[in-house]
Image 1 (cartoon, helix red, strand yellow):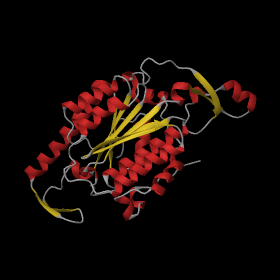
Image 2: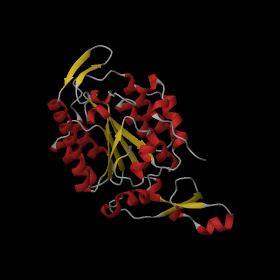
Image 3: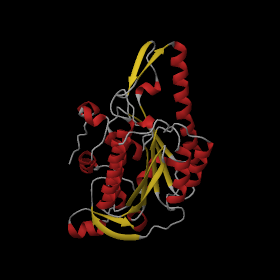
Image 4: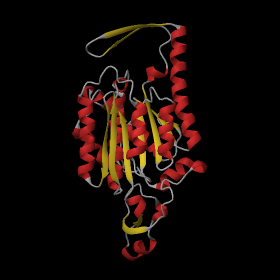
Length: 316
């Protein structure tokens, strides 16, 4: 089946600023062509690949009918020849690997000038990852973190675990984030290292504002025992302000006016570039996967780029 993803311009206005459970459930139909299996990550990381299983062996578990997105190198040719239908081999570590999705719910994530809110983009990417993990019989758990702290969900098997996690995303979307929610990342990353079991795939979806050396140390500790992928989410205006003029921002309650000048534009661009470069340097040094996704990118296309070997920004 050919999947034709929706572009951000197709999205209803109300769906640009919040997520709903039916919408996140609907993404389950769009996971064709996505794979979290180790072979896919190996291709993406190339020579910098490090085992996601940290010493755990590969043990054949069972054979099942081939599904779109499965690695053709794992085809079971004997069963395929005997039945006349393509079958693929499953390995125990891949089949039972915990997938831990950490999503930033701080106030800066509830912002966009184009496309969808950064949090909405993060929620859609997380939902696609969760449904892909379920299709591969992986366990799904996660973390939501904000100003008030973080909440972790133990990875579990089955659709019920995915739906529980998606409901937490919906609840976070409906709640008004606290104004001081620019803090909390360091603590959340430290908690990840304690909650994610060795051999897990951990994906952090955030704008990475406020990442410090303490947070970096938490990611490094996590990477020693888990496979880690970092997805930076940003709005076009965060990357560069208009050359000059008066800009008005509002959240429905208050408005802020910013007078843009050349010095302001340059300082703004430098600040964003420094934040992104910090995450990229850390990723390269540790061999972690990193991609930058825009609020204007289509979620399925962006995630496929992240998982299947296109480095850097996922969108154009």
